[in-house]
Image (tube, rainbow over all chains, first blue to last red; front, side, top):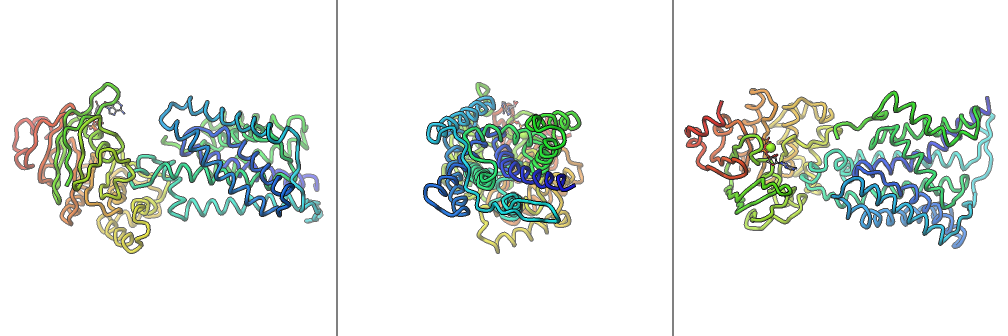
Length: 287
Length: 234
Ligand SMILES: Nc1ncnc2c1ncn2[C@@H]1O[C@H](COP(=O)(O)OP(=O)(O)OP(=O)(O)O)[C@@H](O)[C@H]1O
Ligand SMILES: [Mg+2]
């Protein structure tokens, strides 16, 4: 029983991290209609920035995470300007290739600059807390709480501020957005900034447990891509639900089936869900 | 107020508009008649900057605007309702309207006034303000689209086939509302295939065929014209 609860908490932890990355990916997909395959790599860079802020400059964990978020927001904007914006009117295939190119470029740079070693963001919250007889590390609770706070903040931003709603407006009707006076270029930059910041936050939160290494981006992007396909491309509730479904199944599957299959589970779910609902759980529709 | 001179627009090698000259004066209600594929939407999308003409010029209040991006037009006072309405269908009606006032977002009082005005014009929008725009009926969506276009308090309102797919009684309602808007001082340019009602409410009309303006005159004269009658009225 305790094992079950522990694995459920682990499932939520994983789901939280997936969710922060998936939300950004789905937001970007909504406005560009092409997946930003480099999104996982922004997550990776966010992890490194946090790590170096703490280890090289001795900056506090939270401040390091904040700095990483800002740095990544700027990188996200650059990625939009340099890679995606020039391709705005190109066929999807070209954007696709550009995104994959950006992904390989970022990973190569990371390997050159930082090597291929696994690094651990210094854990400062590694105490164990007992909740209802279950032993949990503080960091896991921080990951879940942090993700929930960021999700609520994102929700309020998108639904209750006019600037935030321009992102959804552009996703729902690009011409309509232009005609009410929304500058779609600025919305694209804003979206990349927000999405990259969320990815960076995911890495800062997960770094003390899941480590930081150059291929972490490629690993997470596969799963998060599966998540937004499951959830329905461009759907926010779909991304949230998909993240927790995947996190939970991976965690429980690793315990009760075999940990060898952990990374295959994502694809098993993908096949299962898409055979029942081919357009995903929350199809955006009308595109 | 709006002056198009020698406008040519092409899609690849296909010339969709040829040497179009149109003028709309302040306070006028002008209708653009044309059959399917005549080029009405192309013309409207060109005025609002979504398409760029290959040659020719567009002047609005004396400024050349043909090279401006679409999002800047609202600031100048041009607001367009696209064919197909282009609503934000997964957002509530009210949010659609508020986004219509995006360019005056700092003018809280003005937005409130415009919202009241839109709700008076189309009371059903007030009732449905919390419903998703995509869940409204076709007529209500058209009203929401016109309402959204009015929220920026434009000087020139461009309406591309607002009657498309609507029951005659709803078309009448929509046209009545547009007439009220025009009487209140807004200049209107409206595209239509069905001339009957459009010529009744408008001052002047242009007839577009295969991308060319083939006729233009006062609306009452056009209504009496045999060719127009045959082609565009029942
Ligand atoms: N994106 C496009 N690419 C190529 N050709 C187009 C495009 N849009 C329109 N056309 C062509 O340009 C011509 C004018 O089309 P347009 O949509 O402007 O006509 P319309 O008068 O608005 O017709 P409708 O009454 O059906 O709305 C048509 O022959 C159409 O096939
Ligand atoms: Mg048309």
